[in-house]
Amino acid sequence: MTDEPRPSLRQIFDEHARYVWRTLRHLGIPEADAPDLCQEVFVTVHRKLSSFEGRSSLRTWLYGICIRIASEHRRRPHVRKETPLSEPAREAHEEQASAPDSSAEQRSAVQHLLSVLDEDKRQVVVLYEIEGFSMKEVAEILDCPVQTAYSRLHAARALMLAAFNAESGGAQ
Amino acid sequence: MNMPDDPERLADGASRSPLGELFASATRDLPSDEQLAKLAAALGPIMDAPAPAPSPPKSPTSISGLMKLGAVAGALAAVVGAGVALRHTSHTTPVPPTEAPKVAVPLQPSEALPTPPPSAAPPAAEAHSEEVQPSASSSSAKPTVAPAKAATEAALLEQARRALNTSPSYALQLANQHRARFPNGVLTQEREVIAIEALRRLHRSTEADQRASGFSKSFPGSAHQRMVDEAAPK
Image (cartoon, rainbow over all chains, first blue to last red; front, top):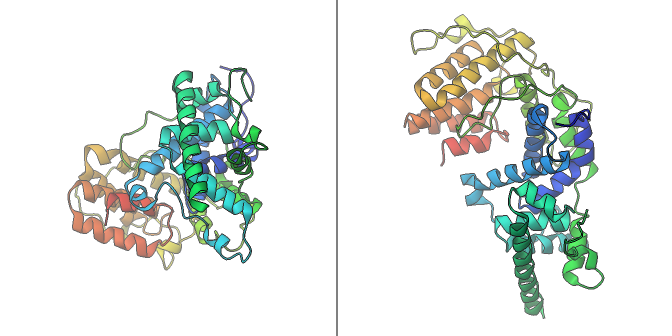
């Protein structure tokens, strides 16, 4: 247990909210559900903050909550029925844009690449490649051995590369 | 942070790999300030509240995520309300971060409950209602009740929620009791979710469907809609 004062929910929100949101989106949460799920993450943080013992860093603890809530959300029956792993290529508001938006296309391409992964591999990729955790931290967040996390990352990269090449080949 | 043995991240090789370029762009995929402001507004009531005491072990009920009505019940109710507002305004006007719902007072988990009536039939609403100022529509009622009132509401529903696993009929009775006593209560939506779940567990699917349908009509866009859908799937 650390003696450092616990940050307030507001401090945690100010520092991490945008990254929690980003993580949820890359874990396959549709944009329409992201506000609710993000809210659920921080309500959970508020509820459990007093029992946070500081054995891990606050950031890994927070992302552990984030991963679990996203995973639970995806297992809800209506989500399984209604939300595919991959989202439509563009969001509605993006479709309204008259000119091509390269960043939107890139976001959509990333979502597509992530969608070829199962949940375990996707979590590793999101935490390591996008959120910048070390592999040790990734293993800690996902509660798995570090070697398992490495294996998942390696396999995920191979799958994404294959999907990327297939897409590129198909486009040519 | 990279550890010495960690492989190079795809984004770090962005100049060499198209895949890396994509992942570099993914790190820039952040919500807008407007989206964050709405989220902060929705969380307003608990944002500066002290963290509640550690919660008891989690109940295995399927709606356990609905509400932990102990120390944070009032705050959560306000958050849920704000969440509904968030949905309604998600593509329109940003909600000012300073706008906080009125019921934000943490409640005492040990709030004493009134003894449930021996009869399953709830008393008439008009005879036993504890509302301070009932309004025309329960769905649009503002949370203006006193914190003690909200605490009683919360405690009653928490008891109903806990009863779901062991005695759904008692849970339903408590939910109906809540409906009679607090027809315009601040936890009306939470009550309905419990009642629908209780009916489903009692295999009274027609009634569950009817109540779920009523819920959808009364609270369009509710943050609890997905739980209602789970409890009474179409």
